[in-house]
Image (cartoon, rainbow, N blue to C red; front, side, top):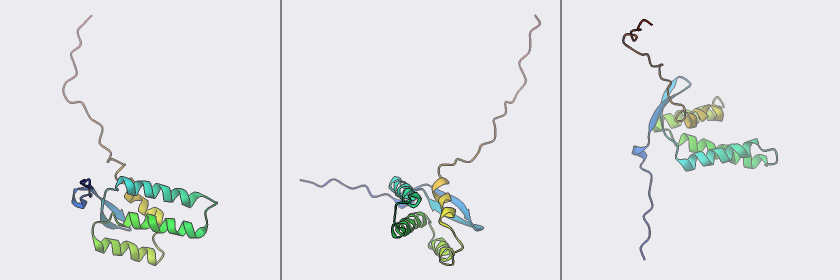
Length: 122
């Protein structure tokens, strides 16, 4: 019996975008579906009142790990971790990593070119 091949995501094949964090341009990869599910699940944990604080701290840690893993350059990861360590970067500021791929850049409205059609007298 042969084992099925497991598809391993190719990091270089993932779409990238540039996001601004504290005036620094950071290149990020698109979220995998599993990462998006994890982030949504952990966000729901944070909102619940019946969850112990220790579990909420674990949820924040997992969300942070998932979001920082999207950062392409190790120097940018370190930059974000340093901001978090000094308490000047909030986890909510990193949510732009998740939403930047869902928000398509706005396109200018299309303008019709050419002459208007001639009107025929009635």
